Amino acid sequence: MKKEELRDLIDSLELYLKLVKNDLPKLHEENKKTSSNLEQLVIESRKVTNIGTMLIELRETFSDIQKSLSRYEMQTKRIELIAQNHDILQNRLNIVYALLFGFFMGYSINIFLPI
Image (cartoon, rainbow, N blue to C red; front, side, top):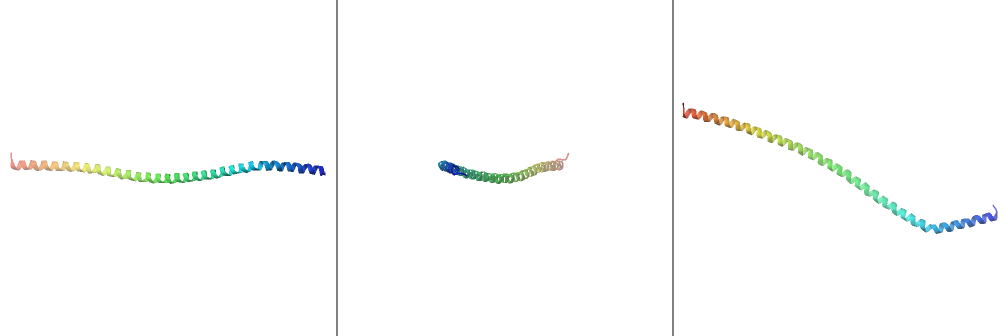
């Protein structure tokens, strides 16, 4: 390379260096903004992760509640069946009492008032 070419190269490098020095504060500011945005994205990502964890816990809790509700519904159905059986047995017992009462009344009338 000749001297002139070297000098031109040095001049162009100096010019490039001046341009870079002028743009450096802007680039630094953009870098800060980008870093801030990245930090904000990390924070938001953690929030989303926490919300996802809470949703999983809520789903498990809801599943447990559904299981408990199912057990309580089964117990309620059993109680209803027992109550129905009790009513049926009570009605049958009342019929037996009525038959016995009728029998004894008829027998008493026959004894005390023979026809």
